[in-house]
Image (cartoon, rainbow, N blue to C red; front, side, top):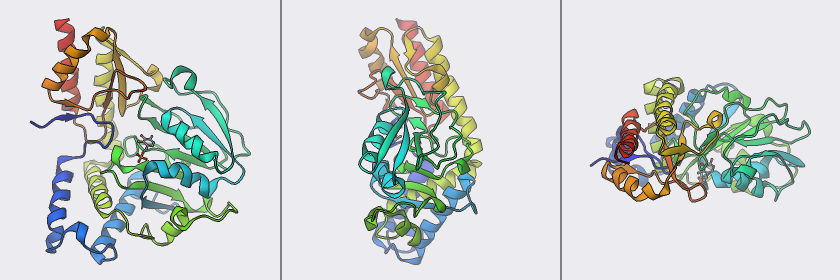
Length: 354
Ligand SMILES: *Cc1c(COP(=O)(O)O)cnc(C)c1O
């Protein structure tokens, strides 16, 4: 039985993408060779890389605006340090909205002064701090657009004169934003774009070249820009599968179209959380994520019953992260509305039974 896959990451991917990716592993474009056994310098693979990068910029509305899209390795976690390595000369500002944000702060401190501009750590990150101002003497300001673990999402981004850096790992390509406000965006592919193994980096070229330190080749954005993500062997399967997902998204009508679906899913999910007296939401209402809904049982003694019912109904990946407990339903782009409806049905069935 096909499961309803609410996994927080690696995430659900469209069936047609999985099918095409699996075909390419056996025989890539009728070449008699597998995608993963050909040279990354061969023409067919160079085309894959070019298409993937072009699609990323096109979907984000950033073509011809001085940005480059790169597919790198080391996960979003490497971007925590790579961003600072390349951009932090004196002082950077960070918004501390969760575990991933805190990790990015820890890495940046190795390279310069870090100002925590605001934090929601005092309330186990169940809200997004507001009303803060971003100092103007920073090398950059860093934020996390969606807090995967806690289920909060930035609905607005600060207006600032300093370069804006954003970890969009868990909501990139899920909602319309003015992406040209950002100077550096990064996202591990495995949350909303593809398999684990590659990280999308979208960078405005003019933010580079401002630090005086020497940068190791593998951590220098300039090298990957110059070599079009092929400074060393790229993760060919992850890039190809990401390309297929981006194509799927474009065919659906792009970010504006998927955003409508994502809103429907989130509305259905949160209305059940709010109306069903057996559950309570974790995140502050106004900051709720459309990607990761976090919620708990009011009465923990119902846990075994609910878990068994969810399992029987084919639910996968709804357990909350250990730092929040309870449940987390991740509703990434490829998750159909019918899966959310099925989960909501299990929740209301519990209410009828209890
Ligand atoms: C998962 C996640 C990360 C870490 O990604 P890796 O690719 O595993 O390093 C970073 N930031 C956010 C917001 C995430 O959701």
